[in-house]
Image 1 (cartoon, helix red, strand yellow):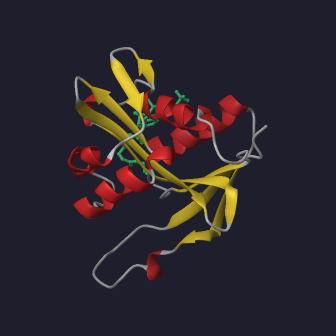
Image 2: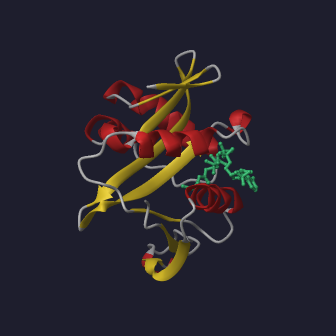
Image 3: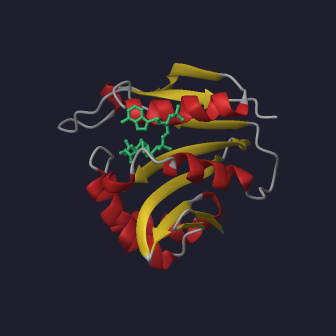
Length: 167
Ligand SMILES: CC(C)(COP(=O)(O)OP(=O)(O)OC[C@H]1O[C@@H](n2cnc3c(N)ncnc32)[C@H](O)[C@@H]1OP(=O)(O)O)[C@@H](O)C(=O)NCCC(=O)NCCS
């Protein structure tokens, strides 16, 4: 657990799932998954997820998991910060908190898919790579294309960003 000004950063528990669902809903640009999905993430993937809390209110969430085919790669799925709390380094702090934890194996890469129009998210990962002094590469073929999404669910491309190797 760590503190960012008045905020607490910690691993989630299954009791956080409902508040995480609300946060993702008000974050605006993210795909909103089911409440069950967030409860499950907070329960079974708590070691690779981060909650930012202010006076028991969830104001930030980062979800991630080790790639099943490459456990030295941490895949960051969704990052969300309450609109009122943005631009203060909270997402960066959550990412650092997560990377600073003990992991079952050494981490060599951080990956995420980020739409071309999501400037804030791109900046977050670029800035993280710069701070670590490691390269970031974009690979469209490893991401997800608009044609993969179901009819009626128009979705921007989600090219893959890969940061590392971390030292
Ligand atoms: C993306 C998001 C999580 C960033 O959270 P945040 O706490 O505001 O990010 P930080 O304050 O840690 O900023 C990280 C970097 O991005 C930059 N940044 C943040 N918001 C930005 C914006 N709107 N435009 C351009 N750059 C931005 C910051 O300046 C910082 O870069 P720097 O270190 O070079 O100064 C937040 O904007 C959000 O919740 N967006 C909606 C959900 C989403 O799109 N999530 C990402 C997809 S998974």
